Image 1 (cartoon, one colour):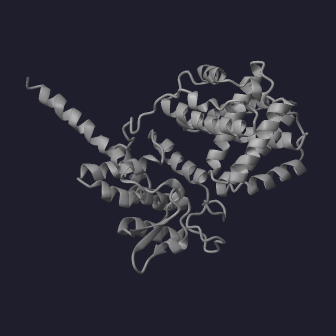
Image 2 (spheres, one colour):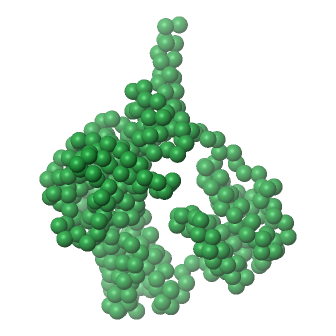
Image 3 (spheres, one colour):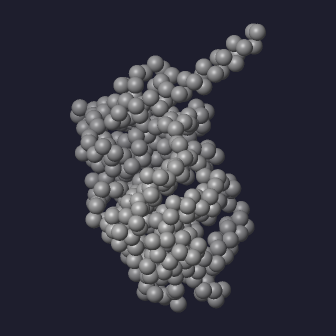
Length: 401
């Protein structure tokens, strides 16, 4: 059923997604091995055979006594299921297999397709926002259809509350707030199109998500030291990752900002580093500090491909492809954390730098200038780290009474 010509079409599709380096190679290999597995076992492509393949591979890797942590195996299996689900969607689009998920009725599918075109025409949202709004709208329409509703005229505010009670009973306030924001946009669209009589979004009571309700998550100093020590190798991967992580640690950059770095961002004569701020769309000029600058210079001189076709700074160590997406950059850093058993993600570097600056007496203006905050209110988020210190002082002080 899945022949070599079909796999080649899928490889071309994978390349068109902007995946790069080892990620592209792994995705292609995963599809090829899955196709061989179901052919040998005489299984049909679908979610059940994906689950069987992932279990089979997990047992195979365990029998080879590969030393991996349970957290790493769980993340690896989750990534495999995600990529193979994308492969199944490709097979559905080629009409090789029937749809594997729930198929919306004609009315709701037409509404969803019109909503997609509406968002594409507006072109004011990021790709992640676009995907979230389409996904949340589809999930709600699937729920409504399963409740026996066959048209937009049957949608009421009570149905929205029922949907949340059924699917997000134990979700966080922030999750509920984000989904309600997507629903407001969707219901506004339905009302403007005349598909629902009344715009009831103003009457929806959403959970209150308090600003700065949580403490910033930081990397423990011992874990940070272990991470930096692990980067002192001479392998090409160690040299590249050391440059990336030192940029994140030193400047508190976002992962997407590191992925966007190009050769002309580094002014070696004047020791300046120019960062494109993805949120505001402007440029942020910073001094090029010796530690981070030396790590990047070593990477450019010894590890980056000399025949690089792109101006991107960071490349895969296994192929001549730039690491140009946030997700690819995020995964390679997360692998470093998982290999050391550190429970953190790349976003913690930013919080860690701001927390250290607060503890050393830096002002909000200084934090905003380093992290590239558009508003000083964003920097005030890190003021809460002092509350933990005050609580510890209060507890010690109470021992004397």
